[in-house]
Length: 62
Ligand SMILES: [Zn+2]
Image (cartoon, rainbow, N blue to C red; front, side):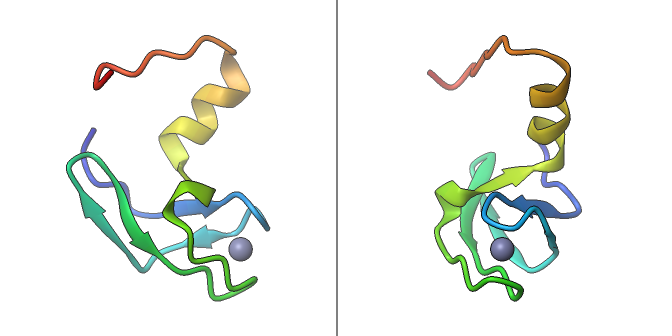
């Protein structure tokens, strides 16, 4: 996956534009709205859309 323009904070659903992207995933991010700073608690907009469209999960890195 290429670097997205923004990511979504899972805690407050707001877009975050300042983050570190490494090896196809989020390595560092801080939500300025709610203070969430755990990379695992952010979603890319691509994943966000896929979750809305389908429950099937496929991660080629695993
Ligand atoms: Zn947030």
